[in-house]
Amino acid sequence: SLELLILTTVLWFFLTGSYDDINAPTQTILLKLFSISVGVLHAHIAGKLLFPTVDWDATTLAGKHYARIALYTILPFAYAFAG
Image (cartoon, rainbow, N blue to C red):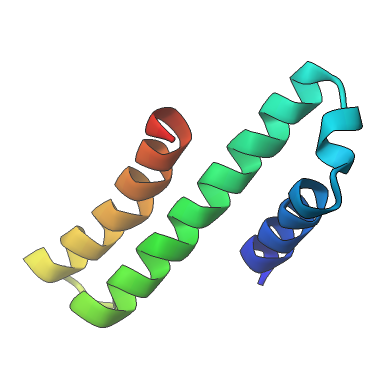
């Protein structure tokens, strides 16, 4: 998926040492991309393990569905701002 591609690309920058050669604003963007990608992957794994799949064609959503939707918004936000 796109998140894994972003994660491995940024990790490559960190592990090869080329991260130090990048200017500060780009470093900040890379760190935010990395944090958000980890947050989305964390939300995806937690959602798969803890909550049922959301059926978007259903007329009503259960509380468990709302919890899974909240994971996909709260975890990336928390990773982006809290690190």
